[in-house]
Image (cartoon, rainbow, N blue to C red; front, side, top):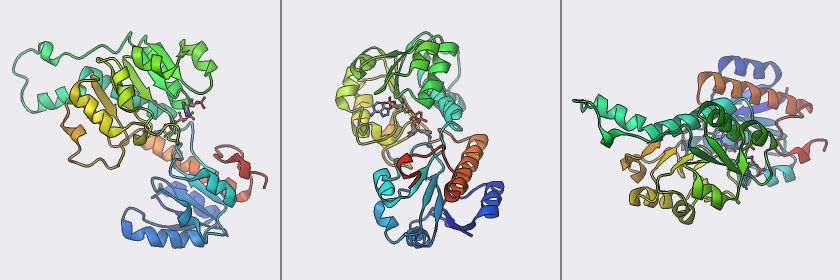
Length: 324
Ligand code: NAP
């Protein structure tokens, strides 16, 4: 039986499914001291399944049996894909199953920042609601506004649908190639990043983290946004220059930010972001519902079983390794 390493806890039924096909070694990577045990286990494995751990090339030295890695995520910035391809290791991910729940998270950040939901709910809980509220507690409208999506792919498309059909918003986007379906179905208009920043009321990042998208939004881009605009980031923390964002929020260069992802996670409790009323910070919950996380684990497990059987054709990040 082929042997795999599971480096994230899996639902019981998904673990049982894997054990029907493979010998499973479970490694707890939640503490630092288990790093060496994880690397050692990889040296003796045909595959691995997990998430949220950076797997660099040094960890794969000596892992000569390794044929497939299955990440329980759609993003694959924890891997050096070119290096995996050189080694002939297939990388599989879990697109589609998390698209709608992540788009819900994006929309909850849009609504929470615009309508000050978290700030005002805390205010009520603190016992401050003594008379009817006035302009000091008003928010800004979401419906009818302009939403700029930087990276309109699967999740961006699901956000565009909510915006155009549910909230009567105009949708602008940037991509390297046109998203015909979003243009036809949601009236999305592809523009240069400079135009998107200049006219959007909400700028929403949904690009993958790559060398090109690293710090895509920095001080100059924040200055190019409207003073009334809100930045939403549920992509990866490093697509935004976080120090520049903190400066912009403190100086009033932009109106606010809704953030699900950060340069360093977990976000430090003393981060200046947490002192700002105009910031809603979430603990990377994009896909974090019971249903979606289960579907992701199941999808990743099926990917791994099929990859090691040589039959996987979908959800393959580095297709170059297929047929080798
Ligand atoms: P996707 O379908 O591949 O969409 C990504 C979009 O970004 C594509 O439309 C792509 O279009 C565009 N893009 C890629 N590189 C670009 C670049 N250099 N410049 C401009 N646009 C670029 O991926 P998805 O399924 O929507 O997921 C997107 C990302 O969301 C993931 O990679 C992940 O990091 C993040 N995510 C976060 C959470 C969370 O928990 N917060 C959950 C799920 C996903 P072109 O190729 O035409 O440029």
